[in-house]
Length: 98
Image 1 (cartoon, rainbow, N blue to C red):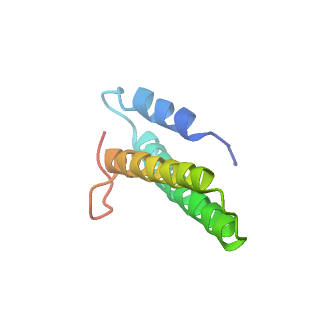
Image 2 (tube, rainbow, N blue to C red; image 1 turned 30 degrees about the vertical axis):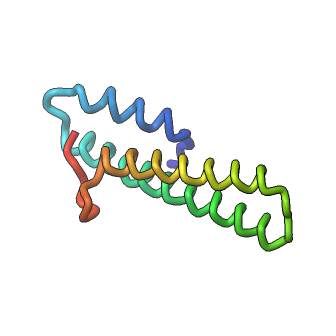
């Protein structure tokens, strides 16, 4: 089964599911899957903005203000990505329990 959710939807579902006092093994496995996909999505977002910025720079675009804005956006996305990953995984990549 394929289900598409955006990052905010996934995190909201995890927040609701984490309030269940005695989750079944099946629910725990589902939550683990969602966490892994959230982690992957945050990594993909950072890679995509980096590729976009590199492409713009490689094409010789010279608008310094726009490039600075893209770099700032990239840093903001990276910070949010790290915060999101740290919410669900420790520094060694091990899943945190909610």
